[in-house]
Length: 303
Image (cartoon, rainbow, N blue to C red; front, side, top):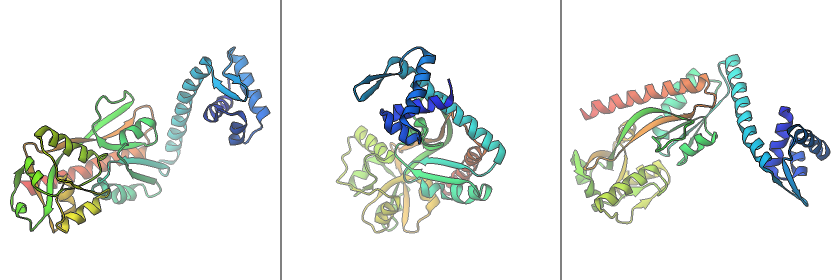
């Protein structure tokens, strides 16, 4: 059994069509069919059922497909590990973060980290599906909330405990209060992220527990729009206190919410069976150091 034959087999499984698979592999259909025949003869079982012009995986084919995917993952691991040893720089790092965290992580990701690894191609994407993307292997690292019942392949590194506060225009009467009961938000016009956002889910969960009904909140998809609406006095919003302290907007005051104080735990996640290079490890160190500095600054401002 050759790696090339497994690659041919995987291409057919992806296209479920011999001629399309041959085209994607830049080979002839006859050569492709011949290699699959060699594979079937070696295994002693057919891999595909041919039904007219259509094909379907046999049970043996399904087993081979599942195991082939694992083989390709291990080969990718070896290639990336060796490449990392050879270069110790360069390469790519794809990171998923929760929407709204981009401003908070900006310095850690694009300044300190770039200075350490100037040749690294760094991609940072805001997503509401960070956990799923890391599990699927489409992201190298994820910065997200601690998942419930995580996949066995996922490594979870706690990052920080995040509390939320009410962000309100500084000349609003409530801005003079250090803290207000959570239920008082029902008296305000709120601006919020969409229903798929983790912050919105958290707010709605607490509202449901307290029997609170929000009065037609304004929904926006970006942090900048949300902050602008608060600064203009259009409404108030609930955001991580750490983020508000870090941004330090002159016209926005953070007011503590009590009973409950919304909070969540943020972590870094990655696949334990996927190669984690020096760049990714350095990123985690830089991020953890940066977050600790912000946490310390927030503690001083509150204390």
